[in-house]
Figure 1 (tube, rainbow, N blue to C red):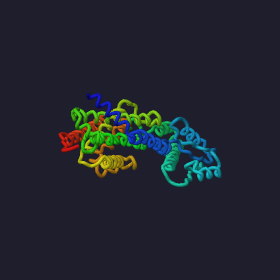
Figure 2 (figure 1 turned 90 degrees about the horizontal axis):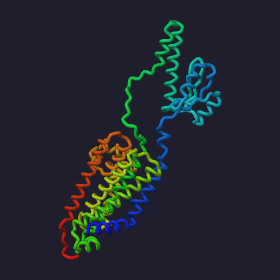
Figure 3 (figure 1 turned 120 degrees about the horizontal axis):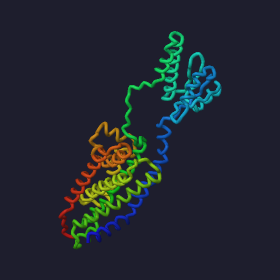
Length: 376
């Protein structure tokens, strides 16, 4: 009887046209638009690349040219110099092809067309070069016997900071949009969870009326309906995850099984919340569904689906809300897998979501248990 009820509850769930669009097609479309909008922004705008710079008069200082050539070689090159004349260099600067023009003469000077990080790096390099050149020249004139030691000392990289990587994960700030997209898909489970509640209430649906007069125990009917909703929702979330990871190639970490487990935990939370909403009062399916969808989109908004830094704003002003917002918690699961090497935060977040699921499911059972109807 249990599996028979589960089978037909599952069939009833997947036959819903809204399920096909909102939980399968819509996330794929939105994920594609996100990828088109944000896919290459991190590489183009945030990752450091060699600085294009025009150099005029480099033939007058072979030492400077050799230093520039050294800093422009290899995979971790700092500069991409173009040795040219003044007229060409100015045209390159005006067109934005270089960040600065360096004039080599008795003194090093530079010309820029604005401000920013790159011109500051070039200016710092020129000042350091001039300082070291002066030290070496003075030493050669006054204490030539110490010249070798001075050059060796200047060649050493002095670093007062011990650099430690917290993670080797994906540092792309735009990846959080994809994390929140999966969170939204998981929370769309409120719709199927809501149906599971309404379809077991005789005063709200025809299916519920038939179930109330059937010999099947109400607990079995509710559990099979919830299980069918959870399975269908988990499939939809897994489909979205598969599309993002294997089709769009969004970096969400290497632990693929935990990615799907995260989607399943999020789906469980979504279904349980929907089940609780569906168990409240005598409102119609349309009203309850409107409440569930509005609540879902509000939670996703506060998690950063529409405004990227919203989650940070909430963290500063109301950090407690991020600790109980299911959308923020679900996106955190994927964030943890993308960033952290250990699973401490992941386990804590997953545990919080499971607790939320238990609370809402228990609340739904308390609201629906032992309901009796004078007439159906």
